[in-house]
Amino acid sequence: MVRDIATAVAGERAEVKGIMGEGVDPHLYTPTRSDVQLLQAADIVFYVGLLLEGKMSDTLVRIASGGREVYPVTDIMDRSFLLESETYEGLFDPHVWMDVSAWAEAVDAVSAKLGQFDPENAEYYQANAAEYRAQLEELDSYVQRVIGSIPEQQRVLVTAHDAFQYFGRAYGIDVRGIQGLSTESEAGLEDINSLVSFLVQNDIGAVFVETSVADKNVRALIEGAAAQDHEVRIGGELFSDAMGEPGTYRGTYIGMIDHNATVIARALGGEAPAAGLNGNL
Ligand SMILES: [Zn+2]
Image 1 (cartoon, rainbow, N blue to C red):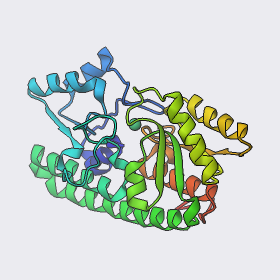
Image 2: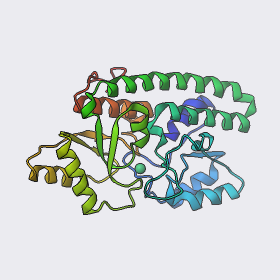
Image 3: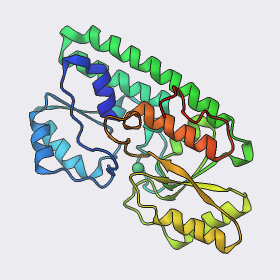
C-alpha cells in the first residue's frame, strides 16, 4: 500500500521498490539479507509504522541511524484520530489504510518528504499527490455508498483478524475480528464460541477470509454455527494487510479497497456493481 503511494507520487522521478508482496503478513514478516541491502541502498524509505512491521523495527531503526531517510507514513496522522489497540495497552491499531480518507493523509506525508529530499521536483510531487488524492476521494465516496446500502441489521463484518476497525468506523459497519490486532495472537476457543453465539443471535449469514491470514478460525466459526443449525457462508476473500497479485487491479491499493467494499456489500445484501467502482473487478 505504501509502495503504491510512493509510485503514484514519485512518478518517473524515482525507482520505487516494495519489500512485502502479495499475501505477505506484515505483522510476521522478517527482513531477509537482500531486503536489508535494498534498504541500505535506498535514498529514502517509507513504511506504515505504528508497529505494523513489528519484526522490521530493529532493522528500520538501524537503517535510520546509519543516516538514511526512513519515514513512517502514519506519523502525520493526528494521534486523537488513531484507534487504540484493545489487545496491547498503549499501542495504536496500525490498519489505517482501511479508512481511505485517512490514507489520503499518508499521500501528503510522502509528497512532503519527497519534496524535502528533492526540492527541485517538489511541485511535481505535489501535483502527482493531488491527482492520486482525487482518485482516493472518489474511492472513499464509493465505499461510503455501497457499505451504506447494506440493510442496517446486516451491517456486520466478521473477519479472520482485527484489521477492519478503521473501515468500520469510517463506513458505519460493525466489525468483529476473530484474532486480535496482530496475527501473532492466537484466537482462543472462548473467542470463537462467543463469535458463534453472536452470529446465531444476530442472524449473520456471511463471514470473510483474508488473503494474508490462514482461514482455519473462520472455518471453525462456520462449523460452530452449523452445530447450532445456523448456516454461515464465506462471503468472499478480502485483502487486509496485503494487496493482490502484482500487475493486476487488485494488486493496487485502489483495486484492493474497491474489491473489499464491493465483495462485502454484495455478500451482506447491499447494492454494488459486480465490476466495482470503475468496472475493473
Ligand atoms: Zn493486520
